[in-house]
Length: 301
Image 1 (cartoon, rainbow, N blue to C red):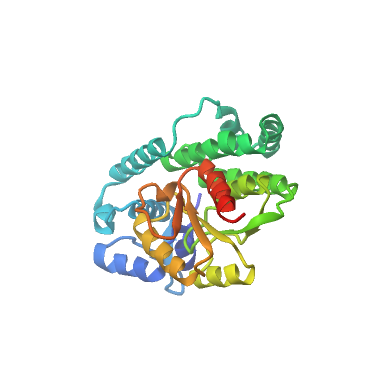
Image 2 (image 1 turned 90 degrees about the vertical axis):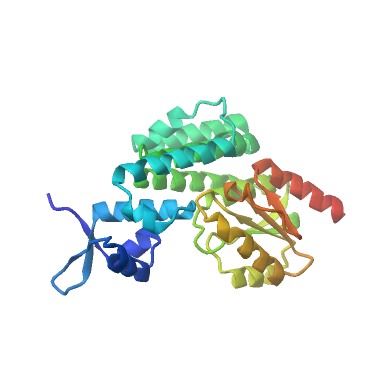
C-alpha cells in the first residue's frame, strides 16, 4: 500500500503553517524532511503532516516551535491532550446530560441517526436549552476527543457540518426583526463557526436582527460591513484554539475602526483570560449574550 504524500501548498492549507515557515524549519531544524517528485518539488509524507499539524496546535497554545520540533513523538502526544483537558475543564462544568449516544453516531459515521437524535432533542428541549445544554457541551466533548485522538479529523468535520445545518434550519424559522442589529463573524485564522451559530440562535430567539457573515473576515471588511448594514453591535467569536496572545491587539484595532456608537461584543472559550478593554463587552459564556442583549435594549429604549 502506497503512503500518501502532499505537496507544500496542500500542507500549508492543512496545517496553517506557511510555505516560508516550512522551508525555514527544514533548513534550521532539519524537520520536516520532504521527499522530491520528478520535477524536484517537495512532497511531505502523511506522518510528517500529522506531526506538523500537532506542532501548530501546540504553538497556538503558547509553546515554542524549536522545542516542539525537537521533542519525541511520545512527548508531543501526551502534551496536547493534557493541555486541552485542562482548558476544557476550566471552561465549563461537566453536564449531567449523557451525550455519549450522539458522539457514537459520529464515530459510527451514522449521519441520519445523529440528525434524528438531535432533532428529537431540539423538539424536546426547545432551541435555547438545546443550544446551551446539548450543542455547547457536545461541541466541547467532540473537540476534546479530536485532540486526544479518539475522534478523527473527518469525523469532527462531519459533526460540525451536520450541527451547522441543524442550527441554521432552526434559526431560519425565527423572525428576528427587532433591534439591535447584530453582525456576527470572526477574524482571520478563526474558522470555527459553531460558536457564532449558537449565539445567533440565542439572539434571534430574543428577536434580534442577526447578520451572519461567516468566519475569517478581515478587520477592515468587518468595519465596512458594520457601516453598510448600520449594525448596532459587532459580535466576534474566539475558540480556545485561537492564539490568545493575538486577541487583545485584534480587538483593540477593531474597536478603533468601528464607529463609537457601535457596540463590540466578543465571546467564546478563547477570551476567558482576556483583560477587559474599554468599549468591549466580554461574553465568555453563552448566557452572557442574552444578558448583553437585554442590557443594550435597556440603554436604547
